[in-house]
Length: 336
Image (tube, rainbow, N blue to C red; front, side, top):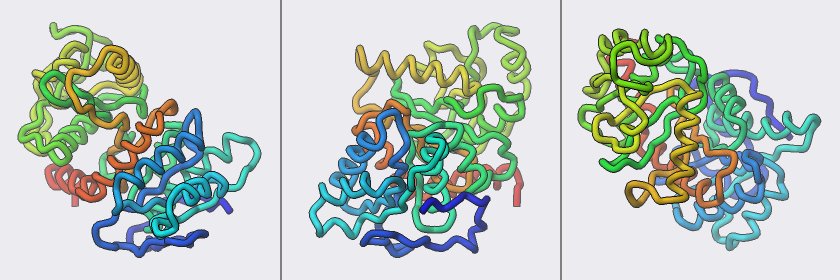
């Protein structure tokens, strides 16, 4: 049955929830990464999610999956793997409900709750972005100072790679929200990608003073005065071409509307004519600013994309990246 999301679960209260198939993983088992996979998320779910989950399992023998969704879909994964691998799988069934949207969104809510209760280490979903962000904010809680958790994507560039945020969570942010996103992006570049002194730029339509809308005109003085974590520094205004080259910024901040349009345009261009480098980063975004690891794929993601997203979630867990970023930001801001 569906387990309702009732709110944030305090860390000291987190505990495993029951699995309905063989293979519940012991909490804290060394070397493993337990990813709660939303089987109902995505335009072509559950079939494409099943494909991605199978690919991820076959690529990573230390991966354990909590399959959240219809038992029939989870059964396809059990059936495709040899019995010796079934110990790496467990299920959290979601029964059909009415309306369909409530049923589908209950998948990501239950996956988030699994992390909150200690039954999984991270969440992977290609479902509705708004439902995922809301579920994560309520179920896991937001970090101090974070009003609107942003989605951060990593793009290939001519110079290497670049963190772009927000790419779809907060479409109409205020100045303080974008300033916090700059902090989060700087910490992300430092912790996950090892950038020594992340260069943070603000996306706009021109680098001359006064260019852009009200938000873009108000932000430079605020961002210029920030003490960014990880040795980050604000380098000024950047344009779309700077995102492609990656030569002057390691992190680019913008609103979620503009970021989402830019991300989808670039990804389509890269798919058609090739990206600036090989290999490309996973086509998945990390939700920053919540107390847990939540990875979001596009609704139109392929099985390969979802497998890469699951692998990305496992990598972040093994790096303890979310906790490291939170500590870096809160220490730098003097938050106890």
